[in-house]
Image (tube, rainbow, N blue to C red; front, side, top):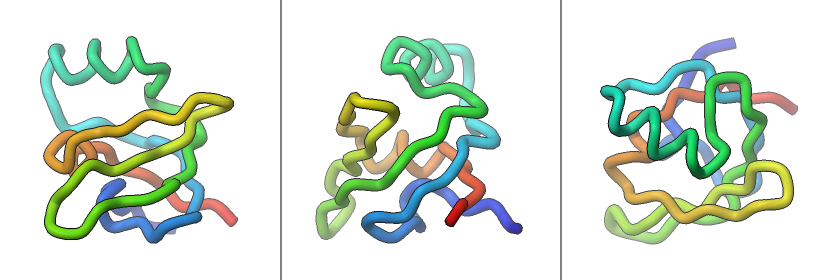
Length: 78
């Protein structure tokens, strides 16, 4: 199964975070939101024209900026 960025996932799809394409600052920011490699997430919604991407990790919903979401690589699960 191939990896896609969080931006490329469709609404309602679920996946597991496999890599984060960023530096320490991005890692620590996502870590504080409960998103790390191995976390299972669900894409709740995204806004047209590069708006925020809303995901659910466990019982928590988080809105990520489009640029940040594009650096999170996910392996889709069914």
